[in-house]
Image 1 (cartoon, rainbow, N blue to C red):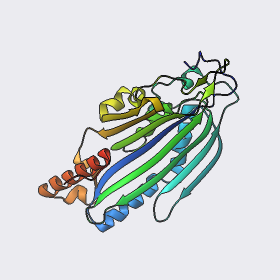
Image 2 (image 1 turned 135 degrees about the horizontal axis):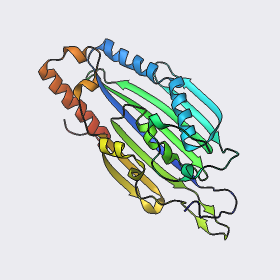
Image 3 (image 1 turned 180 degrees about the vertical axis):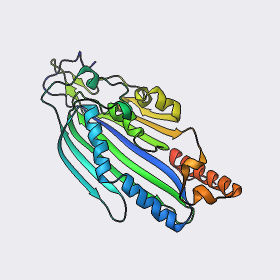
Image 4 (image 1 turned 45 degrees about the vertical axis):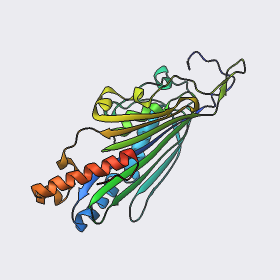
Length: 264
């Protein structure tokens, strides 16, 4: 639809892709819990997050105007990148709403608005459940699509649970003066995930088509306990303890996925 639509002036539609990505772990001792937060702060500091967002800018086809970033004490980091339209026309692949690349295949050009990321590492001091949350917003104006960044961002983090919102706001006019409140067809965010991503996650949708609002929740299918144990817990748990920790981890993941407290 985009390539056929003749507009009066600039495309004023705003397309926003918002993520909440959760990585769950278990740290048994106080020392391991502190070490986990320190590990997350090193692994996903402002410098690393800036590189991830810079890759996103390349994927969607934009031009960086300004970068603001901050590491926080005692934990967490934030990065905001303002982006603008390139002086060259975007390629057909950049304006097409279709699955974007996985991390190993990043390339592209660029458009306008902003990209932000905030991290929230935390550990329950009694249960030892460590939950690392990343909030990401990719907001663009014009013909380029933030959906191109979808697969790349999911695979840049150890994503156990992902909630994704995509919304098209505002309107643009064609040369005949008719308003257009969306410039592409979409019935689910899942359509823009690669086969690899769809195979890895259990997914459910909540969409409001008349409002151009799309919501998808994702839960990682495969669960290997050893992938979730941090520090001493990876070596010292008995069989009974491992079974109890696995139940607690699964319970934590389900509560986040369904967005409510559940009986244990």
